[in-house]
Length: 348
Image (cartoon, rainbow, N blue to C red; front, side, top):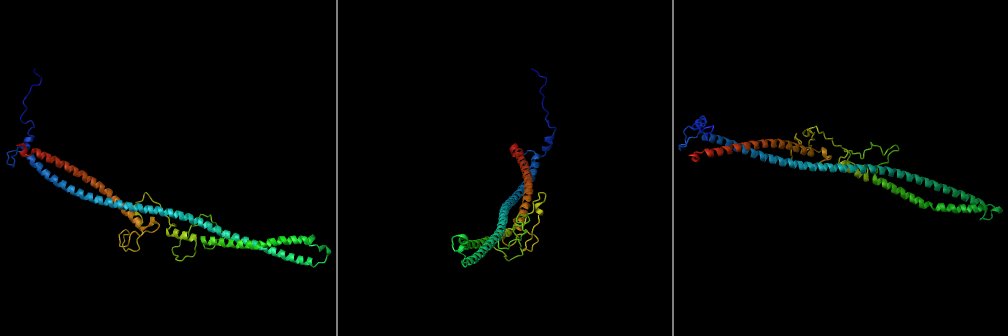
């Protein structure tokens, strides 16, 4: 059946001479095959291979530098985390020392009041027995007067005034016998009260207008210029720890909008360098309290932040180089495949 479209021969130059123009020059290979694209691709492959090798070497060096910087950053981060844990623990210790110091101050204040109260009670008991002694002396005078009186109504010692005086003398004698035991117990109580006060704190008791519940009373008075101990006792020991941990110094509040690299750094007194974070010959770390203000801790944080910034920037550069490397590798592989397909020995 005849169709609408009849078969026609395809013209010899169906590509309008494009391939022919490219590949009609004589080949220098001596094999009689003509393909100038092969030579062009060979030159491009050489350039691409050089670029790829250079990019591979640069990427390898950058990868090693990135791995080293990342490892060092992680070590700084680990040490910084340990310092922050130590800082948190020191703050917990300071809170406990603050609580104990405040409570021991109140116990000391109450012990002072207890000493005053027992001494007042001792004075009252002593005054009471002085009155008993006075009554006994008056009794002796009255009894002596009755004994010398010859009135017959006073002859019977068990009745009347003589009988009342006898009973009075009996009760008076019982009270006098309790004096030694009560005075002894009061003296022991005074001694124990003073021991409690001195074991808590040996400083003088506060004045009468002292308010133990006032908020402005510091837990301890840390005087760095004082090298002598002026008091002893439990509160003194607690305050020694309190001052050693520098619990009276407050850490600055972190500012999220402030660059941590701009934090003030305390210069080392042992170093003549202008860089406080320069590694010297002295043993490290030499931590001081509070840790949040310690020079070494601030330097570690500064080193960590610097390495962290460098790692992030280096990671971006490394990713870009890896992309370029993969692109060059793809181009190189394509040229290798094209050259193999167009190689004269394979075609002719």
